[in-house]
Image (cartoon, rainbow, N blue to C red; front, side, top):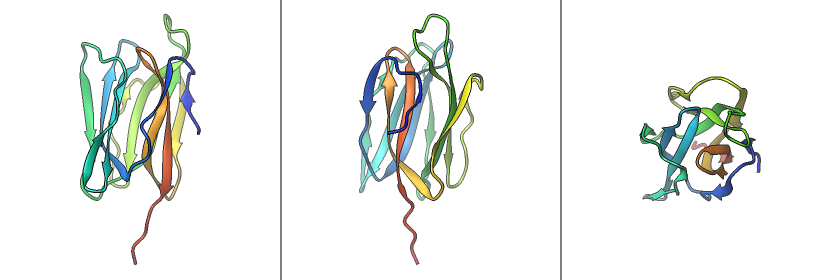
Length: 145
């Protein structure tokens, strides 16, 4: 499994679903302190666990519409003063229809997760009081004829 970012904190894995439905991102002073994914599993909505620690800044959300699926997660990670290992500084989400505004600052090492012709069906990573790294599980996009 490919991870981008640092190797601090505890590993997490939300599992594999039919697709991502909603993403909550919480910012800290220096980057992404919290992330939570909600997934589609058949007709059900499944809430992933909280990763990182929510701050007083609260969360922002990115909600996918019907027929929309996540194709890539782009972002930046960097070593921040006071945090032992690199952490995620910024996340941006791309779908088959649009892209989100960046959640965080574009500084540090840039990364892109995803694969052309595939959709993201699960996320994993490492977190402590901040999100240190993130990775994705992808499957080929089913085409109907």
